[in-house]
Image (cartoon, rainbow, N blue to C red):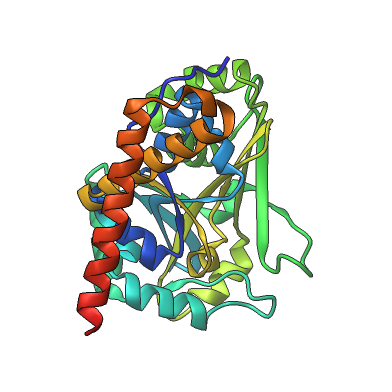
Length: 295
């Protein structure tokens, strides 16, 4: 059963280059953290259907002719660290349907990621070991997936390693799956680039991909093929920066006043009148400042 405890993190919707200005970047949440918060705060699960960009980062590379994927966290997320360049790369590498997309990496980036994994700050998985099932090739060229039931699962070592990373990070996997099952999340689906397609994309240089999380009422979806979503409106879950937090507080105050006017106008008293006066004064101050700046 989902609890109803308000999260300290806020879902922020918008294009990624705008969203990062509204939040404290170091607090953008990983996939497993968003799920944890969603199990505490029902409102967050309400937003997930619109897709969250997570703080996780994937790198696909060819090693001895075989495609492998590395997954690391926020500290080594090369998309967030080089946002402007990354978004340009994603736009340039979309497929014929406008989907897919990836970030071009170099040898220095490759060394950064494999060093992080060697220090226990990420994982490495061979794509062929994930036993991916191909999705509809016309709509999702080069995309595969695997899924499992949260109440009863039989995963190979590579599948479990990837599932652990995105959903729970290691030791907490079994109790997390049990919690998912009891909370109504009956299935986990993980989408990934097929090995042959990945091998062609990363033939000359490693590539970077974003990790997205979305959810229906009964299934959590982890998608490593949606980097192109970073060019469109989606959500991040993070703490607001102080300026945006103050703006949100003012907006909440306006909403509360409007709701009272709609639902219970006869309850208006001195306190509400004072609140409305304050709001009008703030508006007038802002308008006067705008006029002055345009002179």
